[in-house]
Length: 393
Image 1: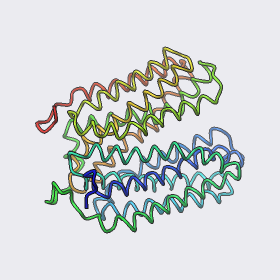
Image 2: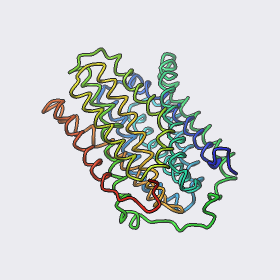
Image 3: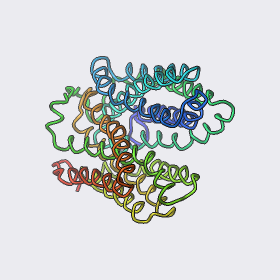
């Protein structure tokens, strides 16, 4: 059941699925504002489409975790994939903005089911000493897809803004078929170094562990700063403060995504070899340095360097945090995994709203300084994680 890398086959299958889904998601992204405009709405409505997807992910994530505990990862994962496929196709057929908004929200539920089940399965079947590497490969495949997808989506949008939605639906359906064919036969296997079944860990037990609380906090801070502010407030800062052409927005986002995709596998291997707190401390420090470069440099070169640092830092935070959570989430611990992932979703919902209001009323320096402060809270909590006896030195 093992590949030459020592990782279980599920990891490569899940990574393939993640890449397929991410390409589809990226294909859809450029079409959203065009499609919404064709339906007679403006930029605020486009923001609502993004928020609806993230908000429904946040709300339904813990429920997805309960489903994982009750019926297993594979059934929940397949349900989420086909829900994504169905809602995307129907969204492409929408004739009004409310229809499109509802389908985006339902798509967020499907996304939550898929992501919670997939990560829970990665944790459950991967030997503990390889968890960081497995997470790095899985997430690296996803972010590789997000780099490729928007370029394809831009070409498809030229044909019709509806076409990318059908493409995303097809990609999600393909991912579901991959799960049905390849994962069902493997889903009940345990890691070779842990043949005895482990009891599921509940949220109350997990929350008593300081490292788990620190990992959730770190995930919230990168949801706020990297997944939220990076795509909402930073582009406006580039246009209004740096006075750079809009083309640099896409270049900057691509730089961040490319660096993240390239460094995730490396960060995963380091997470397996380093003490538990080191990837989190390093990653959050690098992200803070990235925001400082953007804020203090106020130029296109420092903006690009800052976004590249964000991509590097988030690779270490996500793999390090996942490694910590995997050490606690033994057995089918869907709710524990879901709350950890919901930390990033909560940050992605709250961060852009608060930072955007601060930028409007007090200026961009105040907004970005607040974001740096939030990151510092996560860094401080990570720094106080005590080394475990099993940690490498």
